[in-house]
Image (tube, rainbow, N blue to C red):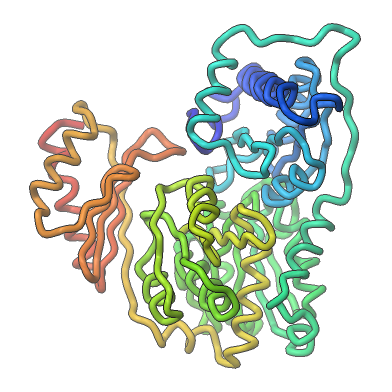
Length: 457
């Protein structure tokens, strides 16, 4: 699958070394061409490369490096690292771009390339289209005397930690004195290379599972509530004040309360925003599939929510345009521009601990102060008819709703909404609804399925 999220597939099926090298070389040629026309054309074109812990990662890592060398790009190899660490490394080295080898939350048999531009942001739609044009044409290769070179950067994670701990409203010494008891589940992903060290520097007592960075996931890697039973039990067994779960590339963070209950990924952004909006002015930017709880938090802080299409780069670009205080996605992705414009689980960890410090109340008590909503998600095969036909039927059926067509169709009311959009990571259509109770949310999902059945799937 090729999308704004990169190129991904099942290893040994759609995703092979040949596919990875083709896209890596095409990206390198695209980045080299833009660099050659830019102000730094007198130096070498450098690309940062890193990977998460997946078993296929080392194979694709070597293939990616060779492909970049073949088009004349020098490679800065950061090795196994979280995706946000790789993005920060692109910025640090003033590189022409970066490649993160990760399938994020996808199951163990998947892997992917994520394309990072020179700003440290993922490529936007126009950049991705331009780059794919090179992939689909004849890729210009370097001659024997112009091949790229490789250097290692072993400091990417250390710089990332320093950036997180330098956020001015994260009071490191005060958090250290508090000595939080924390339970942690890194899902055998790259989080094991950074989150334990971050928690140690913040003075936490840590009880952890799945820290090994071997990519052999013992639970489904997406940190949704239904996958966090082991962490819920660990919180209760250790009397932890907070449970933290990351996905394999460490850009998403999910929470388990002191009561041993996974509270849902949407709360990560809402609670992080609750802290940041005490210190920073500006709107909160969230994607169209994020819970209304962010609206409640923003209203409490006297600001507003700006909605953007799903996809990290879409939120990041809108944050920059709006001068946002904070942003992110309802999947547990927190973006704080003071560190970088990318989803960052370590940033989320630090902000959540600071919030708990200032509130001096259990996480369960903080959550209980807000309205509760229920999100119901469904996946449907794409219909035989164009999706625009589905959207037209839905708008005719929900004439009292406010419609947003930035990304598929989002229909919203005062206390509920439904979002229908094609997935960027799977060949399906996602239907997500939220309402004050499960029955109402399920009813929205079921009504949204009707045009799919009518038009054929």
